[in-house]
Image (cartoon, rainbow, N blue to C red; front, side):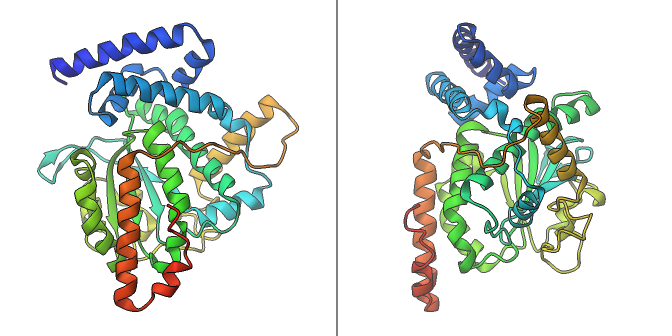
Length: 349
């Protein structure tokens, strides 16, 4: 960081110290966010607001209030039960920890990657979000965010003897088609939560198995993104295996990158190598951790979803959603499927 950046961190630190000093609940929520590394957390939020201290201070205070209002610090005291419901969510909201990065190497002309960064796989195209209500999917999404930040990243930092506060994400676009675009509303809600409350947690997004529909949308969305965000996104050929092996070992590759053909497995109940599956060690540990935290609060676990208020998206996110909607209708007109598009109800995004 340069001198100006250091000054921004110091100014923001002073402002936040004044805020948390007068409210123990705010102090607690900030501790859950930074896990002993407040400076790195302040830097993440400063990056998200282009190092503007007043705007970053406003963003952080709004994040504190969002966490307290929605009881995010106690998110693990509210497990998703029964287990069959949670299994259905895991089978329809495809995300999991596939492994960790290996030692840094020259890649895209930068020695940028360090050993031990978590690698998360996300099945964008095959996630159906059709086994539970929207509230359950948002609750599950936030629980994974909090487990990453409170458990996975601190454990990776201890193991590697240095601070690790970000992750890699491999986004599999297999199965992405017009019928799956009705999920854009829910996906945009989760993206808004991440943008405003978990900023700069992803080091790089790797897009694999991209079909035409993604390529067409990416072409018009890319110019709308900030340069900082564009640099993070790498669209790889095919399943991306050769490129990803420069970043991680074979064992850490998501299962859809290990096959000769493309595609994510939907038979998660049988495939222990499938990091989406509830049977995978990551989800077993996450679910066990959640149940333990819940029982420590109240031995009688109550069923029911947690309602979380979703903040208003920033203008950039709104513009991107409008652009995607416009491009989809254009593609639909070209392919004579405008009628099916109108039934997806994505105009409210």
